[in-house]
Image 1 (cartoon, protein in one colour):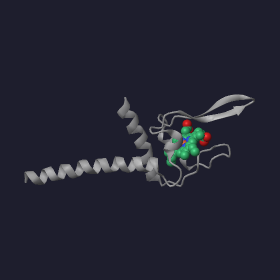
Image 2 (cartoon, rainbow, N blue to C red):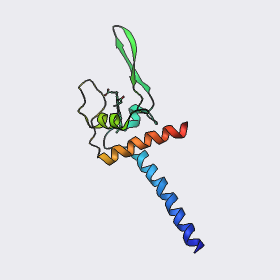
Image 3 (spheres, rainbow, N blue to C red):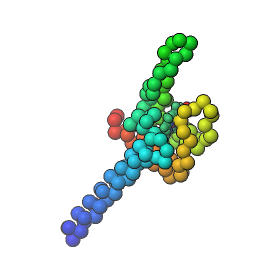
Image 4 (cartoon, rainbow, N blue to C red):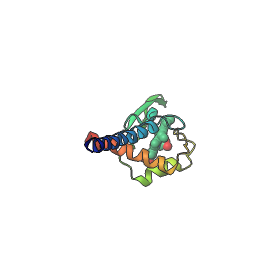
Length: 112
Ligand code: HEC
């Protein structure tokens, strides 16, 4: 009996890790270019590169996606991008979008 309970909690713990690993995998390898390429490992704002504007070197900054409401996050992933945006359009399912959102929120909480 003791063995059985132990086995169960072990299975649950493993389940939890699997969910997180799944989310990480989705973030790093969605069907398209990795979010990580542009948004970094944790979705913080970062400079992706530099371009020249009127002879001046300007940084190209990707905004942080750590403190968005779920609505704003979802919108950004399902709307048609304007032609200026370099972010690719993904065809993620609603549950994949929830998983990605929670993943970034969790990473954020762990750091605080
Ligand atoms: C090629 C670079 C690139 C990739 C890959 C990329 N993004 Fe983006 N993302 C951007 C840029 C640049 C913006 C800023 C707005 C714009 O230009 O569309 C942005 C904006 C966003 C926003 C909206 C931010 C805001 O303030 O409204 C969200 C949410 C987002 N990205 C999530 C993701 C997720 C999740 C993935 C992976 C499935 C991803 N992005 C992949 C470059 C990228």
